[in-house]
Image (cartoon, rainbow, N blue to C red):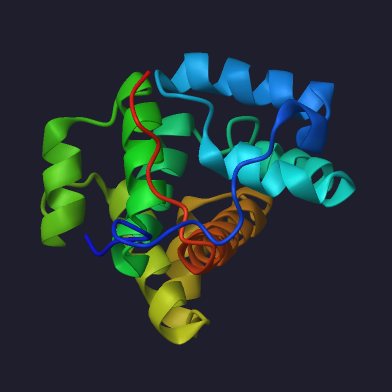
Length: 184
């Protein structure tokens, strides 16, 4: 896993209560309790953008944890994006979340080793499709047919947005030099 910021200083520092406002500040503290970390830097940094932050958070929450894909599948896809994009922050954050919804040590190893025999058919289609999207920014007709035979229309749209969102987020986290959150 490459680093988002292991040796770099964050380009935008996490916000204080005054800079974030009480709701974002409180939400970051609650999120830290959920993840077992200090308040997640993703929230304390992006929270400085005020209204943009709340819009992003609403969108992101509609994908995960409140999306139509089962949480385990969402976490597998997010971890695959994190692995492919070398996002240490996404990897650490979603590894913690994934364990809570059934992502196993064997799953983590398979994601890192790029092995496919481990996955059931549905998981294999999701992971293969995520890999293709990240590499090609598209799915050819054969891959789309595999995905569509596996997911409902709604799930297909959600899947595409999930991969795109976490790809974008990996870029943001890397560019802002946000390091993985330390344990509480």
